[in-house]
Length: 430
Length: 204
Image 1 (cartoon, each protein chain N blue to C red):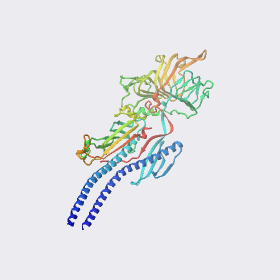
Image 2 (image 1 turned 30 degrees about the horizontal axis):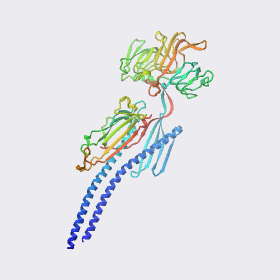
Image 3 (image 1 turned 30 degrees about the vertical axis):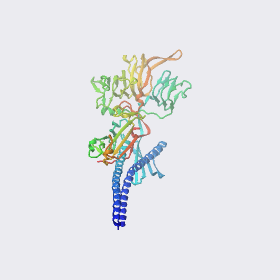
Image 4 (image 1 turned 180 degrees about the horizontal axis):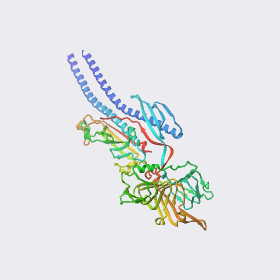
């Protein structure tokens, strides 16, 4: 009797202890299972990423590729697959979608998605170039000329002597003379050159600026005169005084005013001078005249500055023939002459006026001289009319994101990644 | 006489077995509490980690290239722009931690809610953490000390996220065994760290 009771008691204890042990094991396994689930979710995500990277490699190898691809990994460590597809979203946008399938131990098949969005064309600012011309005319780069920043011409680049180009030079045609280092083409290229590349087309109009001027900017129908005032020593408190030359009315624009988008457009001629404190684009649907020095309140050559000016003309940007400009002229800003040139007014009758110092970038349709030279004796050129040139590039502009408000840009074919989305799991703790 | 000895022996064995069962029960209870705490903690941690990791990877999604994506960056809070629901509207997402008083009902005096807010919607509690620490680095790996000034927010390129989760309840320790500065309960703890989390959208 006692022996049977003992057996029952021992069996009872064994059952109780087995149950407790089983429970403990279950908790222990679940704790490990959590980390295992996290690992599997990460693996599914990594698989989708692998698919995206494979798709990207395919695209950048062949930009005409427009299909799908899939891969199954026959590996016990990574039991899954991915499928990748390129989808045309229209409007110069495409999307690469990669979807993974991962066989998890507990949660069935896990899927993760990576969406990579592309812009198949990219807008670059012309200010990426220190110097850009559509036609070079018959102007030669010669001894003593130094160009800082990238230079490009859609036409031939004429060289006579040893101009120095500090950054890369490109031309859609060729050099004249064609071979660097031979004949009169002794140009020095510090960062290389390339010929026969695609043209950088100038825009067909200034409609984007005009639209900006009527939605947050200022638009004037008559000829105007713009005087830039730096305000106080406080940064970005500059003022633009705009005088309507027909009525004499003066419009005072605070450049830091919250509603002002930084664009002034005149239908007629626009003359400009003064000191800028802020970011501003001044455009004319005719020509822009520089009537005196135009400088930044904070000179970016010698410190930090966020002052930035754009002078945009439908035709020419003209250095005015006046007393103020007879003794050097300084223009800090980005100059853009859509169908014309940067030029000096009355050049043939202009006396020697010193140096035209520009600091920014110069974009023009046709290159013109701002000074006339004659050769004397040994052939060293001597300035007889107008200005000697000292054109400097504002290095801030090498960043495509730094440009005056609504400054014109050009499109390049690209597969630029505009956005990248990765799926994830959301849970609420509430 | 023999029966009497049987009864004595049975009492001895029974008593010993009963003692063993009681001890085993204590150990089992404590171990079970620790294991279940571990399980709970790891469940909380992995869930929260997946959310944070996933959402931080999408920082800046839909934001035009020229605009900054991180609006505020502190050591335990961050606010950034992202088109969360991909509807073409940029949302402002904010992660922060609440005060420990919000979880005063738990045994753990260190746990607090991890909060996620989108635009002006009510803030959602997405986890309970004991540590939520953020560190920021530039593209070149330079450490930016938090809070990051507005003029350097655009330099943030990588984020290091450290999260620690502890169980809300835990068995009390024997007061005699608790030394000065030590906690009086056996909280389960799990730590997760993503050392360099970079959104592809900040690489453009």
